[in-house]
Length: 80
Image 1 (tube, rainbow, N blue to C red):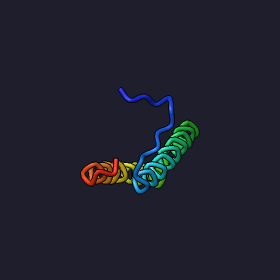
Image 2 (image 1 turned 90 degrees about the vertical axis):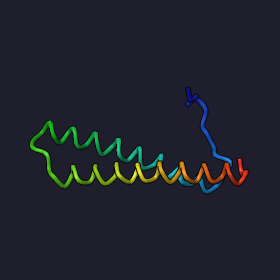
Image 3 (image 1 turned 180 degrees about the horizontal axis):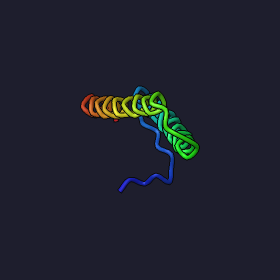
Image 4 (image 1 turned 30 degrees about the vertical axis):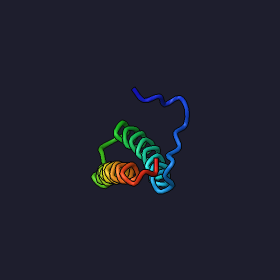
């Protein structure tokens, strides 16, 4: 199991930058989901809001795959 109690810094600067961007997008998605839920309680959902959530979720997925590829490449290159 991953220990999330201490902040993780990747030894590869490129991977670390991607992880930081990924973390910021996760926070943004959480805030957008909360706003979307609150809007749903007040009335009907707007399709453009749902589309924005889907786009951000897709970006998170692409980032995760890119991070995995960068991390694997760094390991093969011996940068970790």
